[in-house]
Image (spheres, each protein chain N blue to C red):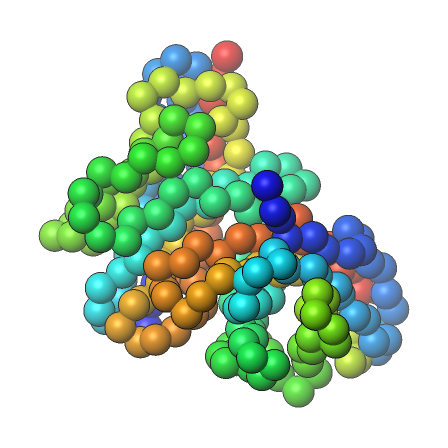
Length: 115
Length: 115
């Protein structure tokens, strides 16, 4: 079974400061990892994904994420937060070994960027 | 940029009634999905669909649910006899191929309210 944990319900950060949204995962095989963002009353927008190769993945809107196999983590980061980054962020995993298509989501972390 | 669309954006129905939620996946995609998000909870996988048949489904997807691709563009989710606990945001998603690295793109969702 595959699962994702997002240990923080909410992260508050001042505008201009770096931000980190944490995610850890559990899969039986090798993972494909994704970050999605959900703005109020909107659907899920894809930010970035890790498939293989470089552990630092760059995505949309200046976000990046670091894959750490030994810690089974895939934390989302941004060097300088914007007020417009305030949204709900979901980490997701897909186990590539099972041949399954479904994506398993974490519970989400609300990011609040304070002006 | 192509996107997944869903109609209606909000559906209100009485308990016991049938509802059909509609989705138009991205045109060259071959794999289709439904997920749901109960208010304040995480996004949960319901079903995946490929080549006119269900390829995977969760325990949530019981006999009350069905999916169909009635034509070359639409993908529908039917709930035969709605229950109060079916109230949720329902997201449609699609991706192109069988590769688990493929990104799933989500629609804006349909908010279903069962009274």
